[in-house]
Image 1 (cartoon, rainbow, N blue to C red):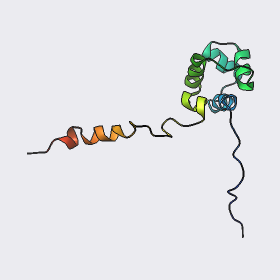
Image 2 (cartoon, rainbow, N blue to C red; image 1 turned 90 degrees about the vertical axis):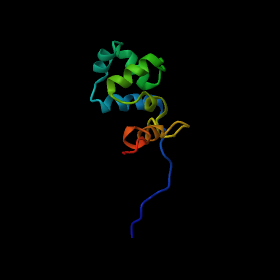
Image 3 (cartoon, rainbow, N blue to C red; image 1 turned 120 degrees about the vertical axis):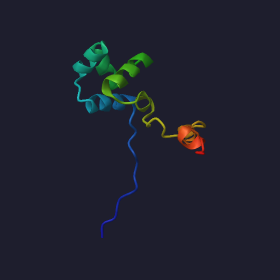
Image 4 (cartoon, rainbow, N blue to C red; image 1 turned 45 degrees about the vertical axis):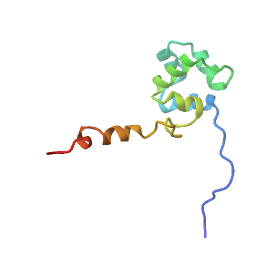
Length: 105
């Protein structure tokens, strides 16, 4: 009988890996991404190989150009993966809104 293998180690994806994954996810070549961001192709290469760490403004542009959250590029986590003290407040606002907050006569 075959069972699922649930042991082992999860590979560590560094920011440089996520930068490349984001670009590939968007279907962009290095030159295309550089053109969209108005930076040099070498800057893209250096970031993806880990030679340099892009500045925050470049990371924001990278995220926008590729359609991924900058939080994921920085941390590898989806925004909202770790609920903070204000998470869920949108639900409270909806419940207290006009459709639930007022009783009909």
